[in-house]
Amino acid sequence: MTVSSMSGNLNFGSIDETLEALQGLSEITIICHIRPDGDTLGSAFALMHALKKSGKDRVEVVCESEISPRYRFLTGGKSRIDGPCRGGIVCVDVASPSMAGERYRTAAENADVVIDHHLSNSGYGKCNLIEPDAAACGEIVLRLVRRMGGLDRTVADCLYTAVSTDTGCFVYSNTTSQTHEAAAELIRAGADAGRLNKLLFRTKSHAAFEIERRAFESLEYFYDNTVTCMKITLEWIDELSANEDDMEGISSIPARIEGVKASATFRQVSADTYKLSVRTNGEVDASAVCKLFGGGGHKMAAGCTMTGDYDSIKKIMAAKLHEGIGK
Image (cartoon, rainbow, N blue to C red; front, side, top):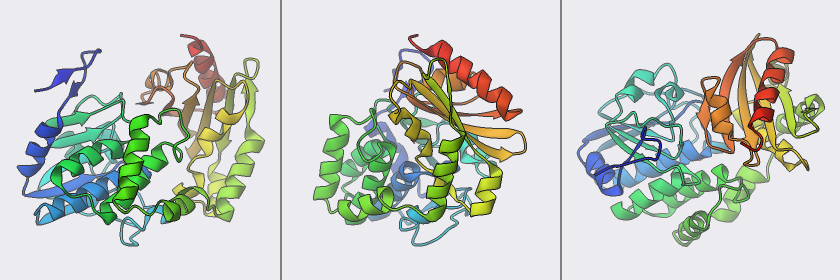
């Protein structure tokens, strides 16, 4: 049985339905989203290990994008896991088929199971387990793994990575008592929290520091210092040979500035195209603003793509964020 969301556009499946759907698949390919973070990778590999432990002969994780060095301990050191899709398709932390990338979009559109925590997810799978109140997809996968009896040290490390990274090491406002309870359970199961916290949150490359410094220099204030915009250019990325890992977390930094209610970080991906990461203090619905530009996400953290001259599009985004304050 599924329960409709308040908007009427989304179906929330149950753990039982999802387990039944997974059990009905003999071979499984798990798809992560492009530009993968710790949540999509940690959740996917945790599910893979648990499914194999339950008796599945073939379960593979795939991702179109290169894997950041920070997360390669999950992949056995591999920088690429862009293999073929075979068997049933499971999308983990993939808010829409387009987020699977060009190579895997068609497969995602025909997903057998979708496991996600993004409110913007339309429920595009045959079976959808979508819990927008979960701080990380890892929290949802933990519930599945617990029922499967597959929680061991390897799975615990994967899920701790998922839960900790999507909460900024448990400091973001999406962190709940359930999140802390999940972390405690994972540590009891053998997750090496000290090692993972150092690797994921207390170690930065030279490129990461330099990208951060330059992004700060580009930061501008709008509307009585309540809205900020900053950028990361292709020139910087190429000059520093920066990877996804080097730029992770930068978009959340302006939120530390007193009085800032919303911020947008523009990462250049071509001459006139930018990927935006929008962060807010809750007074502005980041997901609603990003939907205006074809994106989506959570209320306090969302993303979209904008095309045009940077000086022009930053003013457009700043105005939309300002309009959203207090609504």
